[in-house]
Length: 409
Image (tube, rainbow, N blue to C red; front, side, top):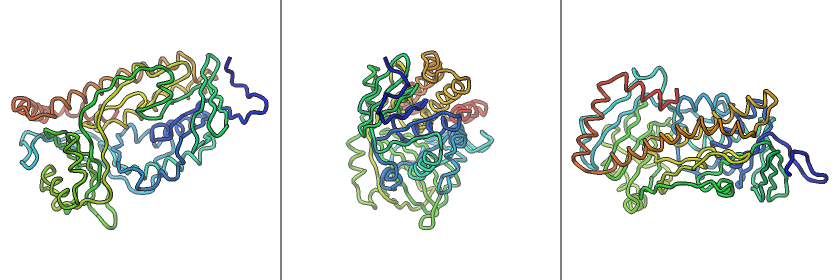
């Protein structure tokens, strides 16, 4: 039988929650739980400081309003080392590379929300902020680099043995290890996967004219092309991030292009409204797929973030879905601890799944349908989707409803 009582002679750490995975979702959960009075251990196989290196990851995150509030509450936002860029407008267009976009478009503007639609944050900056919050929160013990050797879960608690020889006993174990979660697999939780045969190119570009806080989502036959406004710096006052989806073979060829032809290909899709384009820094390329876990829980185990779900980046909501998991789970665990109740009880975990999985499945279905609808060059479908964009443009109430849902409000 597993208990939360230390064994004689063991190097034992007793906590309420043990989080495995210190990526943005797992680290934010640890910080949020600590602000609610929980004792937390967080493990990651990699040492955290190297994650701050700009070469570690090329992404910038679009942080929705509800996620911004979470990062504030978790004590993370205050540690961001550089300015964020608000997204004030989002233009949605349809077209083909090298051709003008269809005049039937959709603009989410300042009149559709009383605050920015989101904030662009560099992945490196968020990592710096998370590391600072993790190491300044008295309720958090960071075990990195370290990893799980064994994880025993039973009715009374969890006992995790790490490869460094530490033992962590907890009421709840949280898998935040990403799409290939070992803890999820060990629990026998099945995963359904949907390959898209696409790859995403992620990079930054400098441009001649200011973006004025406007993001572009341009639907193309090979996949969506997103330009996201970023805060400039002393070398490049006008900067944007690109998240560019293409069929895998073409994406690989584009990714490997020298800077000048790469810039020309960007301009063929982006248009001329930002002026001359200059690629900045490194490029990254990722295979695109979607997946969902059949359930989010097992005995004293909760899945969050990509361990539970992964969607196509067509709507830019993947990380924000993970942050919504964090809000739901931390609220439930914080309330249980405040009442002196079991933070890993089966009833609590059932509530967590009910709060998150249906909404996440709706987002999975919606993004999958968007990819099918917009990721082709069928003339009938092109006309239908363009008319649909124009129709939503004429309905301000519907636009505001879409905006509030995307912002998590």
